[in-house]
Length: 319
Ligand code: SIN
Image (cartoon, rainbow, N blue to C red; front, side, top):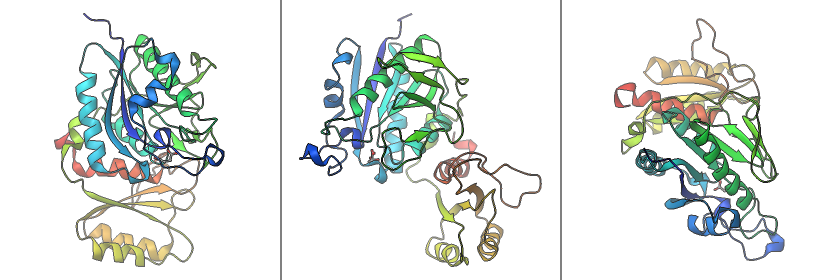
């Protein structure tokens, strides 16, 4: 049996691969410019590590879309099946990292580590955070493999977050992610070594990579409940997209919905559209209660709940 030592780095773009022309104006840059090989070459500490790079996509993650997820799942299925591969690191944009992390968390069988990482500053910024995050992600992948821990995590700013809970909580500081109330799984030392395992490693969803191989996913949209919400958005959506299969509502508080919007959602549910409730509040989510008219998704964000509802609508028979 080969001892798995190789880490595969899959590049998808993001600010970590972003460049600008004026280092003094680091906020003026374009995401997704450098190749994943260039990102790895910029980290001297990775010189002695057995790495293989593959460019799966090159996108600003605001433009993340199903075909990229399909390619990513295909690459993961191939790479993780190789005996010599200890784990996979994915370089990603921060903006939709929580959606990709949650998708992969639901699909993964938890056998080997999958570590997402990103950066808040482009590679050309004088204080770029990408090289350190990438080094840390590779170290965490090797550490987790040695410990026999698989599944999806995200490494940012010296914290390891569960793929089930990670989310972007700040639009511009370096330490922009948290676990939506869950603690980091681990904290890293300045050299990237794991200081302490704080939380139990997460269980994976185990749906299987094949789930996302359909060419077009079921249409699931997110609507927000807010003051003056009168259901027009939902009715317009229904009229414009008769292929609509599901709606996630980003509810007020602990899962409440403005009454006129609620009536429009009831009509849609009666017509066969699945409606789930998440909360637009940063902490706590919506806990399910017996007799809920629209199921509640507990602690995940509306964007993550949308991912779960897409998979739900795809149906277990495909997975
Ligand atoms: C992106 O999400 O691709 C751009 C923003 C970032 O990575 O911080």
